Image 1: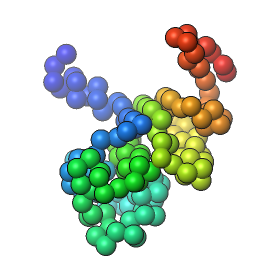
Image 2: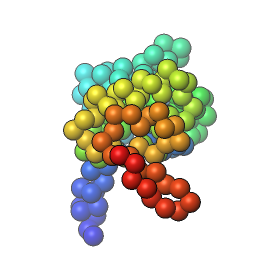
Image 3: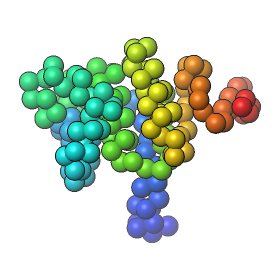
Length: 152
């Protein structure tokens, strides 16, 4: 596979992992990795991901430095940055691997509603231990003792 093919393949996916990696830099640099996002789209993404809610607590807002791997942020704040990154990328396939780690119940509920309402046209692979997060999905599989079971 050539480098160009690999890059095009990578464009198909957005991934939010249980422990997202954050680069040394600012909050906004960790969301807009290319630095090319339109300001309106970026602002919408900050609101949708709920990052905008906690920016008010930082003197430098979205230009706040996150430290080494997000050392200055809580687990939930890191997750919301990773979700914002995925939303901004707008890939057709979204993989959410325990993406609500560090979230309170309200944030977990909001993310579920956002996924089921705003990502209807995408393929979403949600990996979770919270079965209530699976409501509204077309197909549900359960992995148990090395076997995959179809539930819905």
